[in-house]
Every structure is written in structure tokens, then in C-alpha cells.
Length: 513
Image 1 (cartoon, one colour):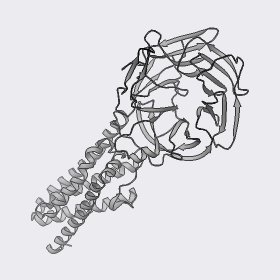
Image 2 (cartoon, rainbow, N blue to C red; image 1 turned 180 degrees about the vertical axis):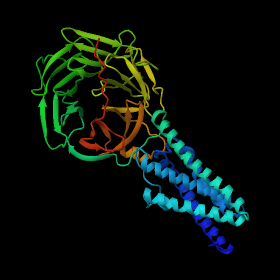
Image 3 (cartoon, rainbow, N blue to C red; image 1 turned 90 degrees about the horizontal axis):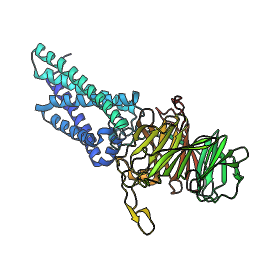
């Protein structure tokens, strides 16, 4: 049925008015709440790398299309632009729902109550309206059947394919930037962790000494030989006191590590290492006086990686200590790279990943972590998503005491770390782009890195408890254990793409000196 000129005019005006109302409302809503809109784009798995300019481009384009649709002379261009924009939006949603690592919250404004599927249907309806407007307008303005249909059959597929291609290209490039060349934009999957249990342990002086076989082992800095053992449901607890066979050791700074069936007592200021079985908690001496150290991690019951201060260069170095019939020490002075003083600027956290058989050292004051094999050979230098590549510290040398001290508060980039399977978990110290300040006041942020692919994966946050921030945490499988104030809290980590049990063990690594 052929439409009359009046009917065509009514249809065109109605479609134009609907688009003008939609785009003006959407653009104004974005601009009035621009900061929130930019934060939403920053969390998008497709556009986060381009949020700074896309957040301006989208409302400006929507307003320009509205202007084009007001004037009959430019309506064809306006309809083609609206047609293209709706294809862009629809393709974006299809990728979000089917190919994204996580599904973010839908946008606010007029579509606030819709889920992503409803958004897609809404967009398709407006896509069809724009298509109808193009066909009616083209038929109205031309008389020749050949002239009328041939150009439009060429233009519409080109616009359709180009619009889809733009979104796919943005997705591919954004994924590469976020995972490998991040410009300090975090990804927060929605509800990735579920709080499961909490318990008041009365004191805030506890730290996590180990987690294994369904048990959590807590040491205490004020009672350094005491061990509190809880099950992961936090329903049952036991207390033990480590018994020393040699009680004449002048301990000054004890650190406990539990890796069943053994536990370890470290004090690098003596220096000494003791170990024993968790069956009886009786410690015997493994090493005394051989090597001073400030940090140490057991690789196995007789081999330890440690950090010390070089007696010749006076900067931090990593080393390997093996205890057999004799005690062997091997130093690796090349691993920790000096930027300012070689001592404060190389300060960091030392971990051993049992699943990958890798030593991991994460700097406090710069955006780097080292992945090292068990022969102290550097595999690679990884980068956290923060942009602080050089430590921002000020060091003063006090001649009267012959020592160096920090003369100003340092910029803390990485506050704490844990590792399990393929992943490194970093308690971040700095706020990224497009993140609400309120979240940083009320929670601690954990960034997750995939050690196999040398990439950033995602982030999640752990809420404060009674206005206390998280002080210590450890991750085993999908269990997250956090110490917050005088509470211990457990969570389960569930999010698409996170597979802690699927690790690739590097069985070719050997431990040697």
C-alpha cells in the first residue's frame, strides 16, 4: 500500500521527534551527571581504555543528530547518523552479553530500569524506526525507481558493516590496552566476591601466617610464638604456643610462616631460622648466624629465598639459602634495581608461588613486580596498572648516626600482596581513573594479575569493617581471608574468567645453588 504524502510527513515528523526526545534527554542526562557517566564508561569492558574522549563524544554526537533531525533539509543525514549510532549501541550490548569477561551495570537515565536484553530490544526498535525514516524520506524525495533504490541499497549495508566494525575494533584494542598497556583504569566486575563468615578475634595485632588444608594460621606480633588456628568457617579455633628447644636466642623480630606439615620461625636480625611440625609445634634450629635478612619465604623445608642488605653495596639484594649437611648461600645482586638509594626504593614484598614454582617480589613504591625462578633467574618484570614507574621518595642521610631515613612520607603504590595459582593479588595504594572517591574511603582495592600472560585481569574491593580498613589478606583457591581491625573475614571470589585451580606448573624448574 502506497502511503500518501501527508501520512509520510506524519511518520517522518514522529520518528524525528522520538529521536530528538531520546537523544536530547540522553545527552543532557550524561552531561548533568558527567562524572558518574565517565566512571561508568571507565568500568566498561569495551570502552574503558577510551573513556576520556568517548564520554564527551557520545553526548555531543547525540545533540548533533538531534539538530540534524530538526531541519528537513538535513534529515536524511540525521537518520543515517541515528541508524549508525543505534547499530553501534546494539553491537556494544551484544558483545557485552556474549563476549565480555564480565557484564557491567546498565546505564542510567531514561533506560535506568532496563536490563541489557531490554536495552537491546529498545535499540533495535529505534534502529528500525531510523531505517523506516530513511526509506520513507528517500522515496519521498526521488521519482525514479532505479535512482531511488540503487544508492540506498549500497549506502545502508556500508553504514551497517562500518558501524559494527568500529565497535569490534574498539573492543579488540581496548582489551589489549587494559590487559597489557593499561593507562590506570581498573575493571570492577559486579559482585565478584561474596562475604561468607566473620569472627571477632579481639586484637588487631594478628597477621596471616598461612592457609592450608581448610585451616587458617594466625601469628601475633605482640605474642610472637603464639599461633591461633581457625577453620575456614571460623567456627572452631585452637591456640598453640611454639616450644623452642634452644631458649637462649635473643629474638627481636619474629615472623612465622606455616606451610603444612611444617612451620617456620624467622628472625633475620639474629639471624636464625627454626622449623618444626604442626603436630607438636616444637621448633628446632635450622640456621643461625649464617646470613642476616629482612624478609624470607620457604620454598621447601630446606630451601629459602630471602632479602638482605649487601655488605659491600649497601643496597637490598635477594638470595637463596639451602640447608643440608652444610649451609649454602647464593646472592643475586642484579635482581632488585636501584633507582634512588637502593634500599628504600627497592623495599617491597616477597612471596613464593608453590603452584608455578616462582618467587615474586613486588615493590612498594613503583609499579613493578618481579617473577623469578627458583634458581634466582629473572623470568620477567611485570607492571601493575599504576603509572608510577619511579619511586617517589625522599631520603636523608644522618651522618651522626651513619644511617639513612625517609625525610618525607613516600607515595605507596602497592600495599600488600598474595599469590595463588596463576594469579598475583595486589592491595592497591592509589586511586585509578574514573573511580569514585567514596569507594576508596570505605573499601580496600585488590588488583588481580595473570602471571602466565603478564596481564592485568580485574579488580575487586573489600569493604571496611567498623570504619577499619583491611590490613592483611591472603588468597587460596577462591577463598579470600582478610584481617580488618579486630575481625577476621572470609569471602569467596566468583567472577567470569577467574580460574584459580587451572594453573600451569613449571615442572622444569629446579632448585640449585
